[in-house]
Length: 530
Image 1 (cartoon, rainbow, N blue to C red):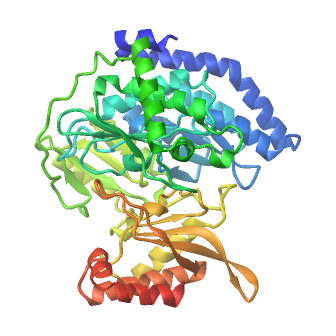
Image 2: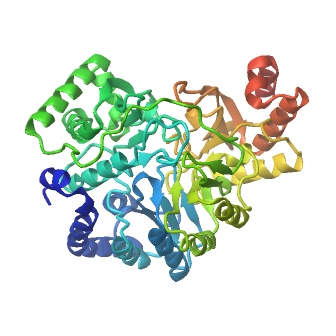
Image 3: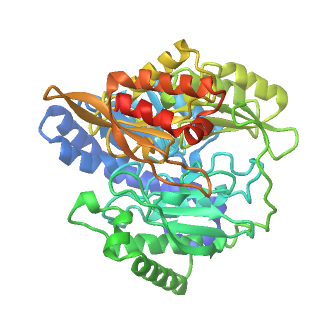
């Protein structure tokens, strides 16, 4: 399919054409996956080689090599009722017990057998969910502000642009060979939950109807803020900039050393100004070639910014559309109860415009609800987070992930239990982020309090532990990284958090107020435990 011709002529038909293209891909490639997953399952193919093959299909083997994960790619985090039904049906058909909402706004189904994986990927394509590029050296799921289009305070709805970017990247994914993955995010200007400030590409909506663009940011090793390369990108021209990023990455990325094969290292190899110059030159080359302008998408009108309305701790959120609401549901640790997709589908199938949106912090928003419908969804989701702290983020952890160092989910569960038992009031602890390894899958480096899986020597023996990060932020306009501040034993983390919560509560302050007004008290607790 020629994207350069099709995108500008009939963008409304692209999903069907893209599914037809995916069908051809499946017919050609699925036999290869079946062959290789069979070899891996039988022990004749090593884990590293299999991972290099399977990632392109959106599937990986877990720590237990007999179990596998499939990542369902959801552009912009959108989960309409039809796809929600597919997930609910798949959970029942394959008896899936572990479902994870990811920080790239996708859904992961875990503990599948080798024989189930290819069939599930085929069925997903039939339901309009493309798994291709869900892992490996590919453009990953394009992210979008989860409440885009309905959020008070947004500059304009960026979802159409996120979806157009996703369609474009999927059409070229099979023909490009990048050094590593590429993450693209679109922020509506009301908040930056998608971390546009430090993605490989971060498009941030502006009041005048344009995007500011940062590139070559990222978390994990050698984390960096994105480099501002253009403060006024015309929305209809975003695909030229995405093509330029792919071209720049392929031209200058490190194909020899995977540890340095992310776009953020281009800020070092080319220098910030050198990278900006090369990138913008590639933008101009793409524009001269032409064919990627989004003519059919209406250019957003200039907007006057107003602060978002509603209490951030209230799960029922008034939309900018009068009389409509969104409901926030955060399952602890982003682990979705297996019955929840079916429960939500049974409610939403009778509400034509309602849909789910997956957020980067492991939260589901259900949008376009009347007041009565919102109450129904609230009752159905009462098992979720009760406080800001319980909305904390944790990666899937080392019990599942073959790359993991520590079990981040177990640590979060223990911390939530301890904080509940101690009756710490809401607000005395912030949302924390726990990553089981340095990969920063929970974005722990951008959290008020973050933890990274590690080891600590006690009596010359390595003990399970986590590095502590303090002072990070993903707030719009104030994004910054926390720095390592000691290492805590895994078993001490719940007590450490309880003491912080008690100290803030004793002062009658939120964590943010307490940590800024009484830094010596926080320092004393860090020194006690770390």
